[in-house]
Image 1 (tube, rainbow, N blue to C red):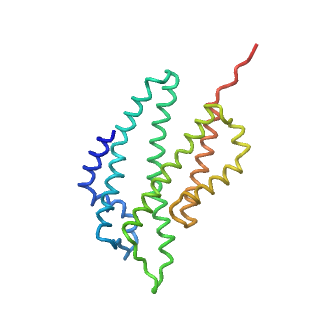
Image 2 (spheres, rainbow, N blue to C red):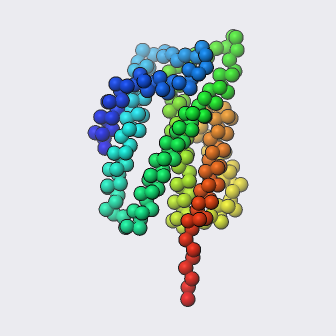
Image 3 (cartoon, helix red, strand yellow):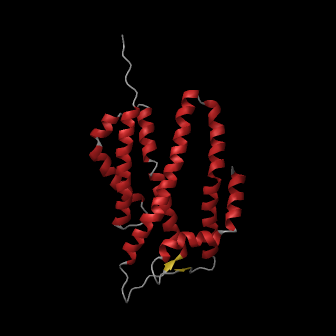
Length: 221
């Protein structure tokens, strides 16, 4: 797994400039806004960081496959039927969260934050902080979009019931907004709302699905 990741990162490094341009695209939509680096090695480290993130993404099928081959021999057939779809769903949700952050949240967040510039106050955005912000947003949205998997897993394991989740809806909604405020790299309320609202919708969808998948209790004679 480590070899595959290193090889993928090395290949992605040769395309690191294109990757940097891709991640910088949301910022370039604003006229007159450019990226700068203040330290001699900052641009080089950014290329390495972007190549490593892309390498992890492109090597993830092999990494997940190896993890599955390691776990599968110790699982029962019924467990394999449950876990494999969950792994596939978790990958799709992570990618969906990252795409949503790139297409909607990051541009909206930048629009809100850059609106505070004036004639005497201009942005001078460093490449290091910008990519930390961008990659942090992608990671935060990708991870938090795994919320439905956690809920369905807890329901299937019998830790909680759909009825309990429904009764605790107000507390869960409050927790969603707190988590969004804490984990969103950007301090602006727009980005936090753009994370909290999809999480709430995912919670409702997970609750609906959990009710449909809940096994009926067996009747005792």
